[in-house]
Length: 534
Image (cartoon, rainbow, N blue to C red; front, side, top):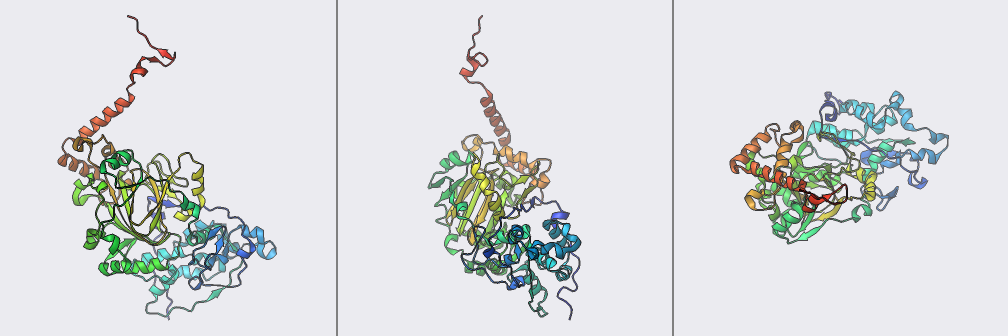
């Protein structure tokens, strides 16, 4: 009988290597402290990962509380500090190096990058050659890529990506019997941290700070004057009370009304039913996130069961009609899923409304880059930690010493967070969550609505015509010509607006530079008044 892995062609190298990406993820491995012996016993046998048992409820590792669903794989892969703790000749050698041969000189992250070039059959064969290569070759993110590239969204998740690949590729063949493998003295901070980030609960101190301003029932004018014009975040309450979605959007109904419709989930598309089955069983560091910009067109009921809160209804990008960039999304994900630090696209602001569940937010103003985040000079790329949980583990504490602390909150069902343009923000689901978010280009300028002069129209135009707009602009197929299309649409809909706003902004800037009366009559060098004798 042919192997499950027979007949596979060599797949393309990872996209991160062959194509420039907007976001680069890099593991920031910390040197873990030594663990107490009772937390890391030598394990005589470790079953294949798909047969691992969950950890006991309430278990802790290195001061982190483990999720009840956390796998026991960490008993086989331990932090490097344990080499010093255990001592003795039998534990002095790292089994990682012994089993890798000449490959032992490669750092763990680079070795995994090399293995990512292999097709499934070769990866499976390689993982059978030594215990070390078994550990690396069964690293689940490698198999996640293989599943998504071969089966796209047409798979049923089986608890791990490796099991899912085997089950999906063996629909007409019996699965090979599960076997046990003895793993001893394998030490890797990189792999241990990957497991730890996937297995721990949020620490209480990460959720303690809630310093965002909260408002209920404020007028549109107060929202503009207090938050939108000053570019300041706020959490709004009571905005969703009339939404039918608040009562109707449960799992059973979404599966029923969406039926066979497929939604964007990472790089693939899945039905709602298959995605929920995946999210129920996922135990990974970066769970896939359902994030679809066409949901209201795909299922008309979804678009009719919510409405834009009154504070965000004026949107200049609407002049583009059907050619406007993607601007609204349905967001569904399990606990631990979310978005790592980013700035919203096309110089827009955003609002995010939680329908089910809760989300932790961390936001930094435009002039402050979050710790651990490294944007390129032109803003086209952002290097950040591999996962949100890794950022909390390695960088959150650094914010405590900063004079300008980030704005933080937990947004619960029925609440809305306003994210001003240019603000860096991170969001993580604290439980299974459903939300709606929309990006918008703020209220009409002063020449049309009588409000204060606002310059974001010029900011957007400047953003759209940057030399590297092809890399910066998102949500549209025509990134190069979006500036021309938008400017033409503004001129057609509101003749003279751009000229008038430009003039008023320049006038306002001139006023800021103009000295006051007292500055004009004071001699800064002498510290007294200036007199002119005629």
